Length: 274
Image 1: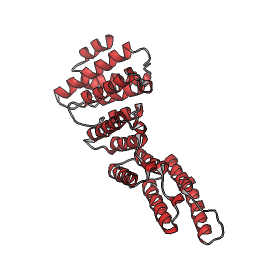
Image 2: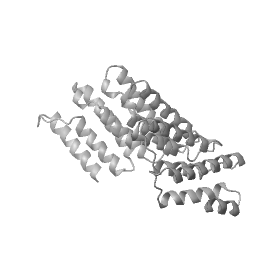
Image 3: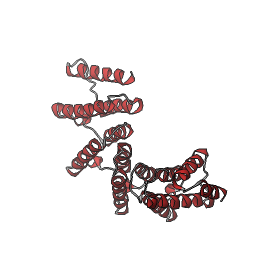
Image 4: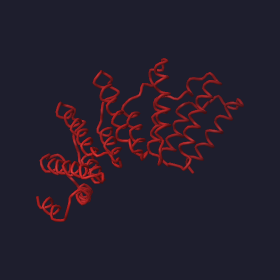
C-alpha cells in the first residue's frame, strides 16, 4: 500500500508540474524514494515497477532536458538491491543494469562507477538464482572486486558481505570441490585481515555460511570427503579463534552438516566427542 501511495504522489507531482500548476518538479531523489519503498515492502510486481521507474526517469530527463531527474549511483544501487532481494533468477537483469552503469561511466558520468555495493548486489543475484554455476560466476565478481581494489580503486574495497555472499552462492552447487572453494575464499579474506584490514575480521556468520555449504555435499564419495575435511577445519577455527563466538545456529548447522558427510553414527560420535 505504501508503494501505491508513493506512486500516486509521484503521478500527481508530475501532472502538476507538467500543467504548470507548480514549479516544484520531481527529481531523482523523489523517484529514488519510491524505489526505496519497493525495496522495503517487496511487492510482487516490485522488479517490473522498479524497471518502469528507471525508464520513466530516463525518458523524463530527455524530454525535459533535465539532468536532475537522471538516475544516479544511489538510484542504480537501490535498483540492484531490489533485484538481489527478490525471489527468482534476476541475474540477467542485474547484469544489464550493471552494464548500463559502466557504459554511462565510460561516456563521462563519473559518479556511476560501479563499487563494492553494486558488485555484491550482483553476487546476491547469483546466490538467489539457483543456477548450478552460481558460485563460480559469483567468485568471478569477487575476483573483480579484489583486483579493482588492489589496482587502486578505493570504491571497490572488499568487505565481509562480498565474501559471505560469494560463499552462499556456492551453496546448492553440485560441484565436487565447492567446499574446498569456499574454504579458499575464506582463507583469502582472512589473509587480508591478517595483513591489516580489520574490517575483514572473521565472524560466526561467514563460518556458518561455509558450514552450510558443506551440509549440501555432492553425492560422490570425493565430494563428501572434501566437505568433511572443511567441516573439521571449521571446527578447529571455532575452537582456536578467540573472537569468533558460535551461537546455537552455528552449532545446529554444524551438526546437520556432519550428518550428511560422515559415514556412520560411530564416526559422528567420535567427531562430536572431540
